Length: 191
Image 1: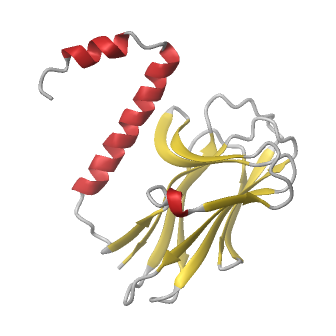
Image 2 (image 1 turned 180 degrees about the vertical axis):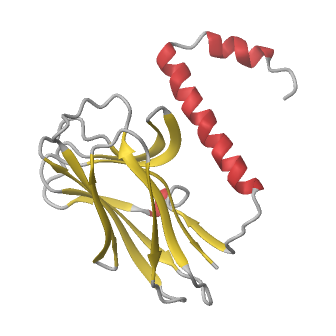
């Protein structure tokens, strides 16, 4: 598609909300193309974003108020592909994956970002508990209400050739309102 003029004309006719959604989708496509263009320096990776259709989601107590999906999310003005994990009124929101670990993979790390989406009006004393479990054991956790992306790199000891259960959890530690929790670009890498 060389002549983009008709496309620009169509974009100009969209509402402001639709243009914002389109901008998020374009950012997602750019991330996806950049990821495919990069030679893999780590040798192996597993994207939880790309595998979202194979994930399951549930609430530990009652799903009322829970919102789980995969979509671009803006945190601190920076948009990333993300897992949305707005926790329920009571209990935790859980996004669960089963990940096959290839034979002879070592030095496995879980790289991710987390935060509260732009527009949330959380009180300063209201927090969300973010957690990661591997085969039912908690391997990482952080309480936060940060409206900027917070980065984490978690070294993991996993058995190559095994299938591992990963759970991303969020829980409101106070009022459930405005706890617009998201996980940005969660990905496993290994050598």
